[in-house]
Length: 119
Image (cartoon, rainbow, N blue to C red):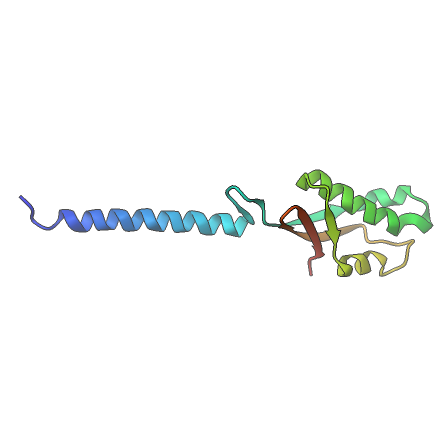
């Protein structure tokens, strides 16, 4: 005996499932990751305190090397391309006084990680 009440429940159930799937997709895209793809976009704050161990005239060079090392360790990729704005920010006060930390947005494109300055 069909009184018409069962059909809306099945439509509501399918709508709820569709909403749950859409919500799951939006959450993963907000976090910067998608299933099967890995890193799409992520923001890191990289500490550069270790540059103080280098001679004063080599500190900005060491900061660039530290950024590359940090990104290799945290992304597990060897090919890293640094943005020109990031380089300019490191060298802004000369080779002797790089910033103590820096915020970087990384974007994965194929097998290359591109790092750009966040601000």
